[in-house]
Image (cartoon, rainbow, N blue to C red; front, side, top):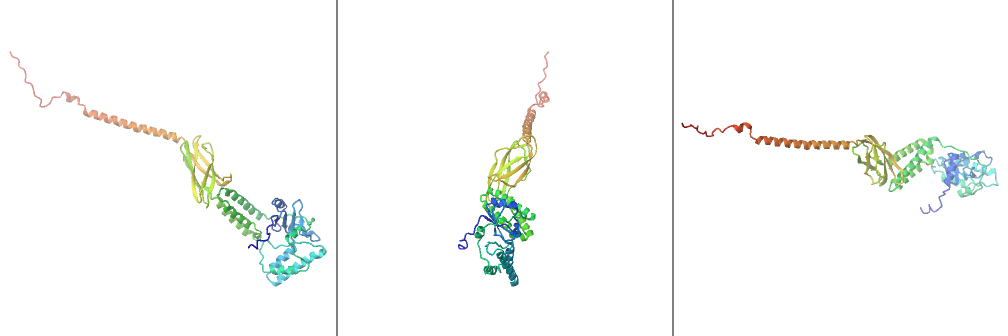
Length: 399
């Protein structure tokens, strides 16, 4: 492995887009990205209109730097030879390859030109004839191998005009969706304790889907893109508000519990913003910050105050990452405000209390009256003589 990586295999200023897919507006993007030299297919230039084949190094108009333009006839013959499956096909392809190189050599025999031929990036060569093709190419007497650096250093051609090519709309739409989704996941990841766990995976998936090898099978590519978008949608919804409602608010000041779910395998930190749909409720306090452990839930309490009248209110719950990026989709919780129930309930309680004690006092008064009535004598009993009382003898006067 150390020998494999011992050579300088990285060039950060060279871009190699797929053949025939570069538009004029793309050149500004490549330049801004630091790609001072591009490898362009012959379809992106008017190379075939020239009477003589120039060096592969050409100057792009408009200050877009230089580009290395491939020789399409030579590249086509090289690819056919490398992927030939029979001896006859290989011999035909090699004859075409050697004749194309001979034609260029015969144009200006005294002038050395550095040409560039490439294999097809859209397919993977079988490799059966690759070594044989390169060996046969090395045996041609009118050619010599050159490095990419030598091609870039060759005298640039200034008479090759750029021809803009457009990528099919069938690919542009899904490609934009992939780029937007990667941006969304990058923003979402700022709430995670280890963002690279999801950003690295998404980047590798995007790079694989942007590979030019998909160009030969658009239907399979779109299916793979849709599958990736579905998977990433599940990821973006892994931090959510599980409280659904409706919730009844019967006091003037209450705390509404809101449950936050985290389905990820690592802890997340979010800020909870609560906004009522109308003035019946006033949310108090600052934005609530909460840390939710991996694969768990946490309940936070939001203080609210009933302000004006009764009725329906919808609380819009939005989660933010610490840097202010929105996490997931906002949730809505329906609230039924019955603030006067608190005063009405107090009146009802006071009335019941009065009735309870009043009934007790009335019962005591009635009981005492019954007791007093039971011990007092009746008027008839006061004048009635006892049955066995002695009778005094009559007094007889003496005369």
